[in-house]
Image (tube, rainbow, N blue to C red; front, side):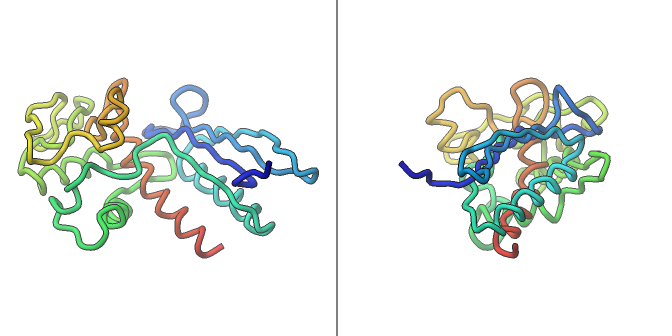
Length: 205
């Protein structure tokens, strides 16, 4: 039976603010087609998101030269609950608008230092004028528009707490939680801009 894809790239992302390897860092697992058409596994543990992106770029360029089809997966949300783009008054397809917005607003330095908590606070201000919907952050990033604990509840008819896929999964964490164990929001904020770049790669390579 033939495979749907020639290569597979699975990425365990990280929102770390420091260069890091090992625990709480980025891991890239690759199953790649060798000369005998068998899948061979290899892994990478780049210390920064920029280096991870460059590694993925290199892999895709190599695979695309062979005309391969490659499946890439990330362990963070690629979109937001229904109505988020509209709440920010963004134009166009909601997921594309959010990807473009974060690509513009998120600044990720080569050493992993980043502005994700400031961006989350700005989004909160634009949506609610206060600490909603994003919440949870380290003490030094607490501000009027971003609090360490959830202070405003989601209400029926308002901006949802979960995406439909998370409602179906029942145990998935909400993208609005940015910090502490079980959170996925920071990874999404720091990952979506790179996904947008990779999408552009798929067109240009």
